[in-house]
Length: 252
Image (cartoon, rainbow, N blue to C red; front, side, top):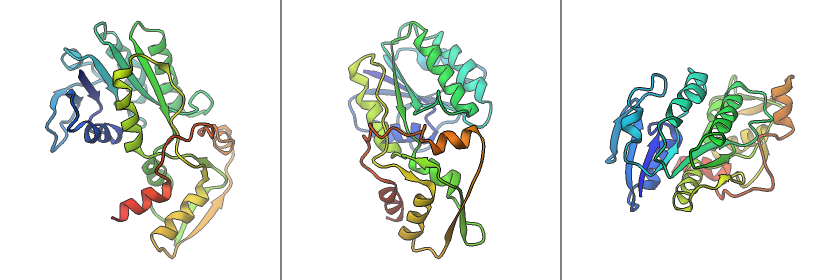
């Protein structure tokens, strides 16, 4: 089986390459920058301009599309560039699209673009599997709990996360390679739902910090959707590695 991984330098892309190492697949990787210390065949491509896409998708059976851009040029990458990519996939047996839980109910621009990409894929002739996950442990930590201010983690009060380990999700995606097109799958979520305050308290406990936590209220549709848990799915606790496990593994 010949597999292409897009976005090979990103967090999910890097996790996929680690999981694919040693498996019996012919693996090609593509990105704008060549990742260091990787033995797989690398091809330059740029979703923004479309350059290199033809060569990247040539002679592959399955694509795992880990390329994404949540901050810069999001529409150009997530939608416009995605359309360019789909137009070149007439020979593909399976296109695996990693996505995010609850994106149709969370009023956040990047999520709306991901949802639009899902719809583009569904309406194309490309055989596909859409695999949604909750936010990665590292995403939650880096976005909300990266550093305290004046000995306090300042967090939005009552926001909930069901964070999941990126390596577990990468293994889940690779397990889909030989299953053929599945359409939209059940969500792949972390093993527990915690408020951001609870996650901050866990970080303080695991790292033996002297910091405290200050929860502050916010307003708006985005904040309310996260309080309501639209980014979670308590019926789909498929991951095994908890946020506390993730924090302790970082210490080793």
